[in-house]
Length: 146
Length: 112
Image 1 (cartoon, rainbow over the protein chains, first blue to last red):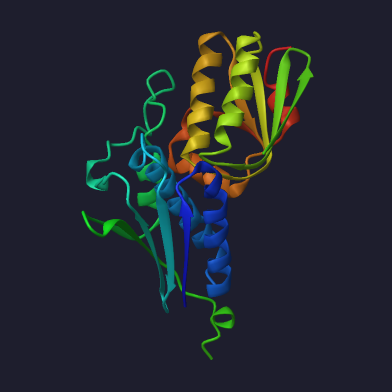
Image 2: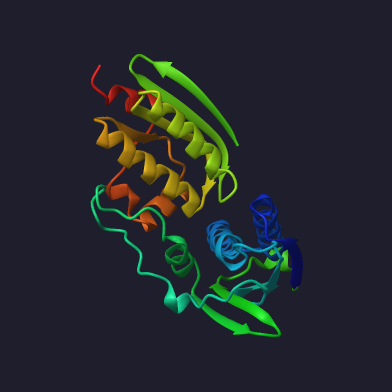
């Protein structure tokens, strides 16, 4: 099963992208908590693209692809904004006391903890592509694989 | 997102309904800042109706926790739903935020 949508990188489109993931997960038979994790990871990635990737320029496209296999869901998020390799994301602060806790900087931390693996590619011609992999057995009844 | 505000004695209860994301978190921030700048620093935020938060919501909460505590108050969360609680736990927010099962107990936790 493969589904795809494309939206302009605007904050007002985040809900629509989350709805797309939720509907795709339901159709594929992904269990509820895995669907929530995917929704969160995709939302954080898209928010980064619109806040940083397209910062200071006209909002460009974000394309989200959803592929459900037997034991995993692979979501790809493509954009044409400024590249950002997740390896360069600052370490999150999840332990300081409230006075010293840094505000922000948790997006990549949440992505890392919501999926099983991810990879990032950036190419001048093809743009940027983040691939998120979530291992999850799909409910047989919903996949229509019988 | 809908935000309603209710005064209960010295405590201000803000009830949020909807999803908190990179779009809607700003409405929450505006609401929190209005309270703090108006001198209301004893805040209870009722999350009964919040089914989702991204890190944008966490930013809004942490910013307001800092602002209220620096002024002798606090922001206390009530009725956090399981999915949202998991995001708070993953981010280490349950160590610094005070959580209550419902609005009544959160309001009662402040000195009368």
